[in-house]
Length: 298
Length: 297
Image (tube, rainbow over all chains, first blue to last red; front, side):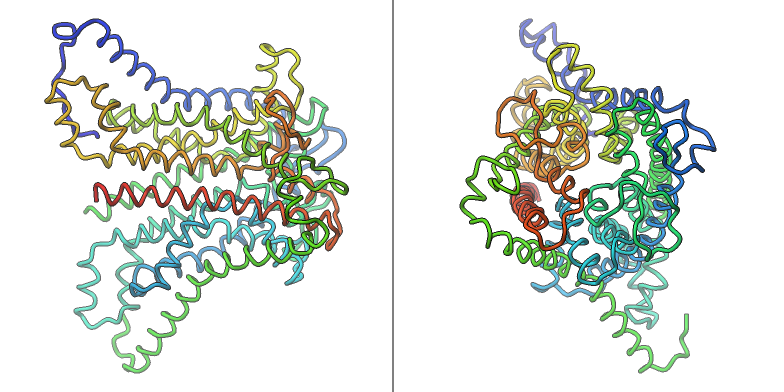
């Protein structure tokens, strides 16, 4: 609670030494708990930087994977990740925003809509590998999309949808009721109200959710392995329906699992690139969130 | 705004949009039904070959001969417990500091760092386990194998720490200020108020944070596949290599198991078991959250 103001207690005047000791110890433990995460992040970044920085170069970006670590690059994985990001965005944005609009603006309070809401919360907790199994059975086999980027992107969309829907719902809920009432009073229908009053105000909040969802999709490897992302791909994917592709996290996984020291360095360098993108996404989301807050307050 | 459109046209559009957005929302139900259908129907083929009883109680996992899931379940549980040993105490203490002691300024620095920690891909944690945590542990335990449950548990603990901390903080913040003031007025120190009043008051929320963190740890895949290895192992010895349920699925999926083969079906049976375990934990967590919402409304 930030707003509880406790008058500065002069502990030594009133309390026995043991109670003072306990009080101080507790604060120290709490600080350790807080710092642990920060220190872990610093250590992790340092370790990755030390391992990977010297491998970073344009050649590394443009080269194909290779048996020789010093010649290997990430081009197929990079292109695969960009394709995946693009396709996932196309599938996720309409579905996510549509669901959020329905749940916040149109849905009546009945058992079906309550079920949808509870269900979304539960889906958010399903392990990503289970989505991979779903994608393998439905998209890869039943719909016979094969081990393609489309199948992977559909799987990834289902995985991040709960996150995107929840964020979009929160953004829509934050739009003041008076905006809707004003629009409805002018004779607009519900949809016209949503389209012209609610969505423009909720835009940056919704965008934040989408960006965070995509940043999750960027780092996921497990479901893609399940839908058949190949471990060794020697050509750049030309179309999203073609069989055989790889993405950055899977390339990192393969390299991390190899005994040769050179591959560990490659993995670290690939992590630096992946993390840079993810950090940029997170900063963008943080910036938009501040913007959104300013808008609904003002 | 198009005001001149005829009324019936506008109403038709209204209904199309309503139906369309409803279909979007229905996808989430279809996803759940799809998951259950796929896991159950593919597992049925497997359970024709192997009885459910021997699957659930068997202590040896070694396809194509032994199909006892217990070693995989124990591997998953041990990693989750190890992760919990790190994330639960540290996450709760961190949450207490952020919610009760930290200044606004410090909170604005630490919270984004924790958010970033939560956003790091799990494969990166796996890399960190292999290149940093295991070598460091080897300095203390020279006999430690390259793949071991301990190092996997530690990095998964770091991974779920932000979840535990931020959800616990939410629960602590929900405890009304008047309860704290009552405690302070009775002469308790701030620490005593936190331990005796605030934490017990937020307990159901905190427990739910723990459960959600553990469920995440149980479903975690890439970090444990890299760090803990690929050996199904029914043991309490955390210095040994262990395979979790999700790591098994990934290992089989990486290889070429032909569709319809028993080996291919095992990943769905294991997936079903994992789904049931994590779903139970998540639903329990939601029940607990609902309880503390009810309490402080």
